[in-house]
Image (tube, rainbow, N blue to C red; front, side):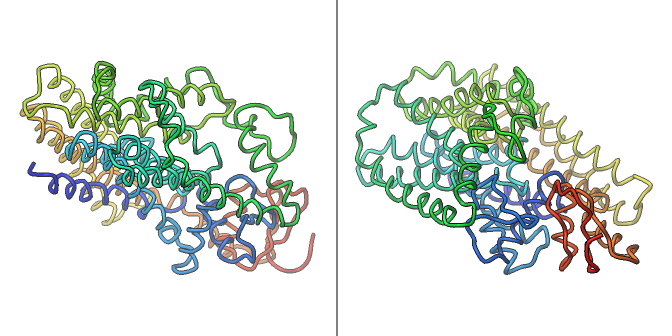
Length: 507
C-alpha cells in the first residue's frame, strides 16, 4: 500500500459497497423497521413535527431526528425502503469518517484505514448502521463526539481545541436527538476516563470545552418547548425522560404501555457472552489489539491517550449496560466503536514486518474472516438453491455468493502465506468487505420475497372482497397498513375493538 491517500481512498472503496448493499438491497425487516418507516412517512405528512404520530397517537419513545430526516427523504423520494434508508448512508459514512479521523491523528493513515473499515464491518456496528432505527444516528453522533473529544483534548492551540470541542458537542446533540440523553453515556464516560487516568483536571476548566454548551442546551430546550405546548405535552415529556430513559434501566413503578423492564430482559454476563459474536469477523484480531492496549496504557503519547479513550468508551458502558434491566445487542453499538479504535491503533503501530506473535494474531484474524465469509456465503448459496423461487436470477445470485466466498477465503489465505503488515491488513479488510457485499447481498435479495410486507399487503387487498377488519393490531401490522393500505382506517396497537380497514363504519 502506498501513502496516506491510498489508504483513505481504499477505505471508501471498501466501505461504500458494504453500506449500500446492507441499506438498499433489503426490504423492511421486522421487528422495528416497518414501524420506523411508518413513523418517518407520518412525520412528512403531519402538521406538527415535534413528535411523530403512529396509529393516531403520539409515539413517545424516541426524539425525532431519525423521523425528521426519513420524513424529508420520503417527501422527496417516496416511501420505498431505499428512500427512507438514504439518510442512514450519511449516518454510516459519518461514523466511519469520525473513527478514521480519530485514529489517523493518533497513529497515522493505516490506523485510519483499519479503524474506519472496522467501524463499518464489526458485526454489531454493521447491524446498527444498516437497520432503520434510532441506533444508526446515535452511532454517528457518538463517533463524531469521540473524534471531536480527542482532537480537542490533544490540541496544541486554542483554535484547534475549540473546533474539536465544537465537534464533541455537535456529536452530543446528534446523539440526544437520536436516542435521548442515554446517547451521551459513551462519549461522556470516555472524557471522564481521560481526565481521571491522565489527571488532566485543568481540562475541566477549559473555556473551549464550555463555549458550545449554550447552543446544545438551547437546541434541546427549543424541542422540549415545542413538545410541551402540544396536547398532553407534559405527559409526553415525562414518558420521554422518565419511562424511556430511567425506565429502561430500572423499574420506575409505572404500569401501562410504556413499561420497558418487562421486555428485552437482561441477564448476568449477557453482553460479555455475546461479545465474540458482536466483534465478528475481527474477533481474533480484537483480542490481540486489547492485549496490546493493556501493555501500552502507561505510555505518554497520542496513541496511549487514544487507547485510554477507547477503554473509557468500552469498560464503563459495558458495566452499566450489564446492570440495566433491559438489554438488546444494538445497545452495545456505541461501546463497540472503542474496539474498532483499538484495532486501528494496533494496526497503525505494527512494524512493516510483524513479529512472530503479531503474525499469529494476523493468522487468527484471517481464520475468523474466512469462517465468516464461508458462513454468510454458504447461507446465500443455500437460499439461492431453495426450491421456492428457483430461477435464473437465483442461480446468478448463488454464483455471485460463491465467488464472494472464494475471494474472502483467498484474501485470508494470502495473509496466512505472506503476513507483511500492509498487505495483511489490506487483504483482511477486503475479505471482510466482500463477505458483507458479494456474500450478504445475494442472501438479502433471496430473502426479500419472503419478508416483503408490501407483497403481503397487496395479497390482502386482492383477496378482500369486503371491508377488512383488524383486531388489536401489533406494531408490524399497524405499520404495514399505514405504509401499504393508504386511506384506510387502522386502530392503534392494543385497541380492544374491531376496526375497519376500508369504509362502511364500525362493526
